[in-house]
Length: 278
Image (cartoon, rainbow, N blue to C red; front, side, top):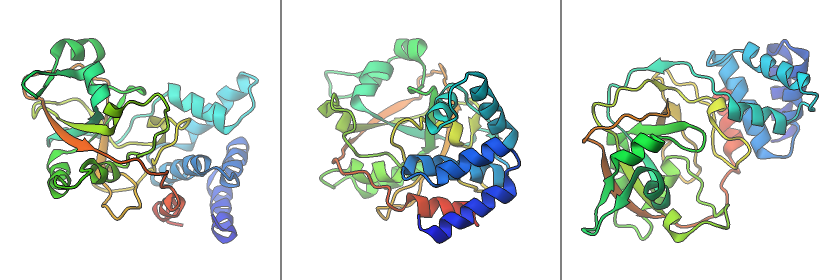
């Protein structure tokens, strides 16, 4: 982030944020040399500017951290967000959605691989674990749009590369315990009868203690937008809470493997500034 842009963001913070402690914290994040910290700040500013969440919610976080006697820092702020989710911009589930998971996650929580070379969703596992992730938040995308991407790259050596980039998923080997199955992606097509509440994503839905590509996005259609810098379009996304809904209309499809690359976040701050519109 160059000094001119940084000064514009600092000016925006000073003009927009009323709380002294919050203003000081955001200014600290802007001047950080860590991209995740800049990302968090810019995403929250987007949310406040366009009414996804209010400044009051973040003031409450700062006030709570102060009562714990722990220093106000990116670490303490991110840990609070990991434990508290903000929901807003609720939308009806009028279309069919899909999500993408690794083979290992699927085998552990959702289903199993059968002898006839097919994947089947296990109702008992859904009853036990639900449709969820480590954060208890599930990101989904319109099925018909994801299918277009899958068809366009099905003959590639690594057909899941474009899918991964489209959905804003990192293709890095960040966990040394990772097994080969984690490089294989599967698509779960939701039942057309799934009617849980859906929300536009915001920064409280992300685990900021991990590397990620998340940016808040203002869109009048009520969808969030992913991020990548590989020339693939940004996918539409919504979230739902942990759900145990199950019927016989969920379907599985193997997408294929993806290749590992270094983190691709060089342009994410530029994209965040575009979304902030200052």
